[in-house]
Image (cartoon, rainbow, N blue to C red; front, side, top):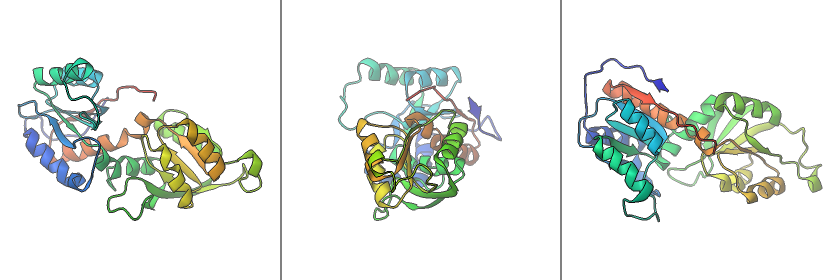
Length: 272
């Protein structure tokens, strides 16, 4: 648990004021997303303390209650496209706890992935010591996914760096396809990297098409292994949760400074 630097513990804002600021800062209206961005549950009281986290799970809600928070800000909120609408079962328990304790819940998905400063991709590129040079899909007006350059390094070097900054060893699929070893030597250096956090493993083909030596994301599918080998691109699956901690923390920093409120990041451990 980490708390951002604050100047005051007595000021307050409304959920609508907080959401309006974040909506504008993240340009949420520019995105067609899989869930609503912004205020998803209105707790109905002024906000004096905020908790941030990756996912609005029940454990995060319980931690926010213990912290006497008035609002939770997350990357993974509720009401995803295609999910059942009734507030029953697990979903009902989560929303009920929020309402009973007067806690507002605010979520930002794709806008928080894509933002060039506080976005998950931008934050991951920064902690890996790389430099963002462009978009993975340059033709899109608000692309999700980026290309970065780094000091030429081996896969072992990159694995070491990822392990240090994310606290977990990535799953690495080598570009060295045994039937094409001459073209994809184990000794090749990584200089150009495609990055898209979370569940973006299928963007590996675009990364290869953009001339990347490697692609970094969160999750891996069975098909990803074959894609990496046959496309000749190293793949690093670093964890959905682990790659998406940075964005919400960075947004919390912005909010803390803007409104002079205590904002506490709570990391609910997730090995996925």
